[in-house]
Image (spheres, rainbow, N blue to C red):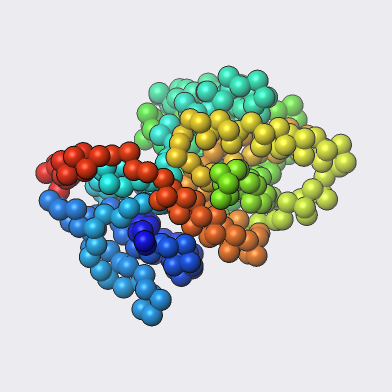
Length: 368
């Protein structure tokens, strides 16, 4: 019996090419694929006006019931569309007929605080704190290291910022690899970061050598296979651009294969890095799996310093794929197979919700 896998995004164009390839392969796993946005769920009904994939037509407009299984790829901004979409997604997660292939991480700062309690991971985790008021940022940067400011919600696609204090007077904010702004007065920094208060948290990276300091970003992409075992799909890195503290995680340019990066390191730093990555991979997946189930994929973003220190800077339960596939284009089919195998496995599991629960679940008017 064929089951329906629904891929939900905030825009039908998001990951369009990859979604089409996944849908094309789905029939071999007894799955049909539909795609939709949260706002495609029609008010006061359980019908969705989205798109359904067929081999002869590709994706075409169709009306269908809420899918058996939903793959959540929504990355929220702070606009009107996201504000409307989030409560609909929360309602869908409680819908008794439907299971979710994946879940998000609701509060990244809480995740980092909990991970710091694990002895095996504590050495790799920066100190973090909530941005409650602008002075919090100033106090952290004045400690002499580097500060990363990122949104609390794992599901947001909002920008992250990298802040440092140069010559004890100039505050430098890295907006992107090609865009840096500077502030000469603390009051200017306070005005700039006021809009992030309560929505962002701070990470402090303490380093020994801060002269001409650069981070290299390393990302590990992990997925579960058909045996429910975690696999490293690949590791890639992006070197910082000239005059940049850190390359932008959302920019897939300047992707470097991990082997190429390793060859650029001194032997003792290379050995230390490989040992650190092995330690992280042996501890982190089991914790994420236990704490944020269901979870079958995530990316770990690491910052590697020129002196050989390694930090865990971010964990994404809805990892982007463009940079990974640029580094490993030959792994696209394997990635698709793992997604569909996991979906097939979930559909073979018995549903927990009873018929009575399903029949009583109606979309409330507040979600219209």
